[in-house]
Length: 110
Length: 114
Image (cartoon, rainbow over the protein chains, first blue to last red):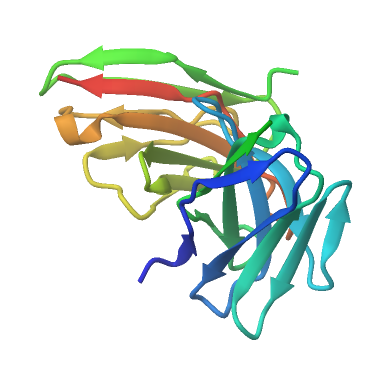
């Protein structure tokens, strides 16, 4: 089993709709959680960190479920510019290596 | 702000050739790492370093060497390139002492081994 797993998609989303997807992790010692966005043929860039109580950044909401060992990302009012691959990343402790999932591709269509 | 700089951006190698992928950061980050990205595989960690003079293996280290003589630079060496090393390579840096620290990535090196 991979340490961090994601549904590869693609999630085809009408513009203005809401889309949500999860990322599961296998190591219960994981402490830090992140969502990165990667555009085609570009480097990953941090979208948001995921905090225990859940957090929101504009149209993006991230949640952490430690009991079931997954994090989620919800995008409201999807824009065409939200089309990208969303990578989740997990770190066990400060200074420890960052492990990525395979990414979830999101395509927002008019 | 340069951030993390990788060179070259593109490279074609013949099987058996050697080369070094360069990575430099100007943020005084202690932690640097190399990933490779293949279709559907996400980012897989090759090697990482927690500071000058200290390196360690990641998930897929075979066929690659690294060294960290300065805080700024973390080159990745392919000693004898193989077609299986065709991939996109990303270098990243971060500050390990902060729990939720962001990893900053270079723009990537697209390597093709023929």
